[in-house]
Amino acid sequence: MTTAAGSSEAPTRLKGKYSAMIVCWFLGLGSLVSWNSMLTIGDYYYKLFPNYHPSRVLTLVYQPFALGTIAILAVNESKIDTRQRNVAGYTLFFLSTLALVVLDLATSGKGGIANYIGICVLVACFGVADAHVQGGMVGDLSFMCPEFIQSFLAGLAASGALTSALRLITKAAFEASHNGLRKGTMLFLGISTLLEFLCIFLYAFFFPKLPIVKYYRSKAAFEGSKTVSADLAAGGIQTEARGDEDDDKQQTRLSNKELFFQNTDYSLDLYLIYVLTLSIFPGFLYENTGEHRLGSWYPLVLIAMYNVWDLISRYIPLIECLKLESRKGLMLAVLSRFLLIPAFYFTAKYGDQGWMIFLTSFLGLTNGYLTVCVLTVAPKGYKGPEQNALGNILVLFLLGGIFSGVALDWLWLIGSHQKF
Image 1 (cartoon, rainbow, N blue to C red):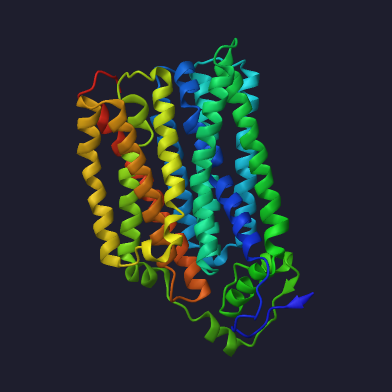
Image 2: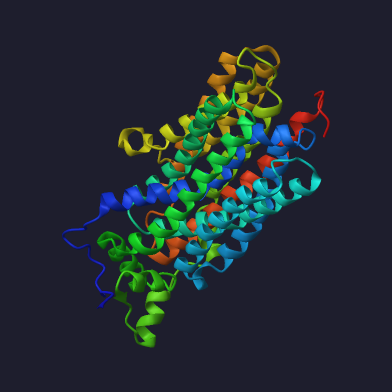
């Protein structure tokens, strides 16, 4: 075993950068593929539970558990082992997705309130797993190079694009067959379960052994981080015990309260980004866009367009001249997105499907772009333990925005012909 170096200077060669970026992409994919699977197979659950508003109710069940868990984890992030937290999150994702398949097979794909409650319980597990993984991974990657967190965020978006593509393929392949919707859904959930298992393997055994990852975690440990010791041990690095005086110097860091007040605008940015997005996606797109020529394909196409443009936009900040770093510029861009609310309202009432597809694509484009800009710019200038803590705070506000958006999404039903 080697020991964590006391020097903070970067080595001349950092091997494994591109491998780490690929792994981060897959870990981001695994962070949301289960939940996006639930959103994308909404047409199947609307068939089983037509009177229960599945896309809205399941999202509303998911978010309190995600928000409550991340709040607890964010407050105690400096005491929680990152490796155990992330492995637990991916394992819970795997088991919950597998349980969805088992539940459907055990009930032969029947509806009913009991089955619906069972699905809601598993969705709550998704929320707990999401809080473990998103906060843990964003915090962990915040003290590494920005390309890692960008790859992770791109993987989050890719989970939506991938699930949408798979859903369209399975719908087309099984639409004409007997019980085709259910067959496509089971294949879909099976693929998601395998992806979650892959993420457990990649994070637990491959990622910690990459030289560039070991370097950044060693640097964070030298700066006083206590959350990376298990990951360093998994990578073959043992942290050295230090004297009390050196330890006190290294652990001098800004408190969570000080970090929050220094980054209030970034926290508000993420909150408002996701308040707007989740007040429209996915509930409004499933239930409030009317009937069009695409028929039952229409909501699936809208969801797919959102996910594809959300994914594409997360690569735009890699082009330096297109990356928005101004704090005032970010806030202005975030606030201007609220003009989409009247745009969606009047398009749903008077426009055709082409305009709705355009607006949905623009919603995804701005969501992904602004998310990456905020989460890559905010951690700059802080020490490793502070960057980890700030990453958890920002994810807390992101999930808070999602929860608020999901609650506000029900307001679209006011004045409509649908029942609450």
